[in-house]
Image (cartoon, rainbow, N blue to C red; front, side):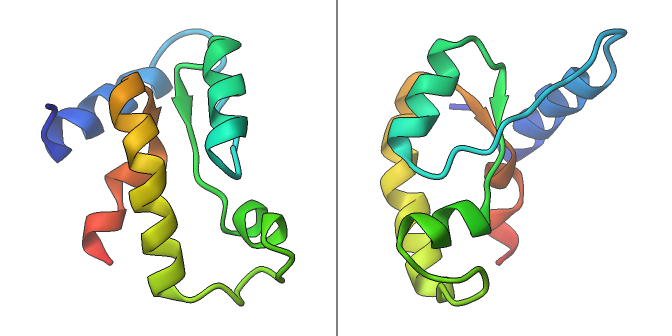
Length: 93
């Protein structure tokens, strides 16, 4: 398993290449699977996308709900090996 520093370095390399780095925002595990299968090298997080998928407005999802969703997502993301930008930052929360 990669450390937070290793994840950060790998993510930085994606930004330093000569070609464009495109990072989509999946809102749930299903959309993440589709985007990963399409070949995206990293996936971002989206508070608005997650909130809308729950029928709520952005900013109306609690921290506990967000962390619980990330824990559910992590089961997929950890198994797939996909890089996810939110993984670099959630431990600070």
